[in-house]
Figure 1 (cartoon, rainbow, N blue to C red):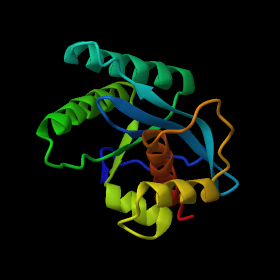
Figure 2 (cartoon, rainbow, N blue to C red):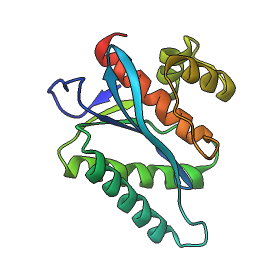
Figure 3 (cartoon, rainbow, N blue to C red):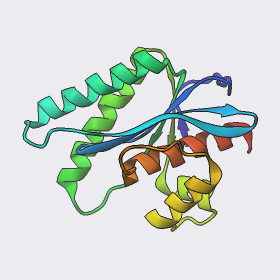
Figure 4 (cartoon, rainbow, N blue to C red):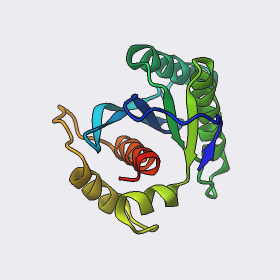
Length: 172
């Protein structure tokens, strides 16, 4: 976990957890309520694949700004980049991540970073958990409100990241 500020956030405050991506971004707004993580809002934001890279990055920044303005979180928990062999994809994710962090810092949010293995261990107890194991544990750990559409992996990952941050800060 990397932390960009030195103060300790108040856990009653709302946190924004983001699973960054270039094509799809998982967002989860959460807070601790009665020592349990509570999901306030989540979505999988998709960029328009027909648009050029700068326009897609701009749309990411615009959506993050809208979510921050509406919910006013004090803290951002963001997943670190997992590099694989697809450097084009990694560059897009890195650019999106930069925009996300830029928007958060611009509002004075405290920023925490967590690696994929840290999140998997916090949620399942197993650092090599797959997407199905993660989704099953997320459903057991918090009450997921019904949605009209299926939650994609990116959205579940953002919720898992929020659970990780709240558990790390509170020790739940």
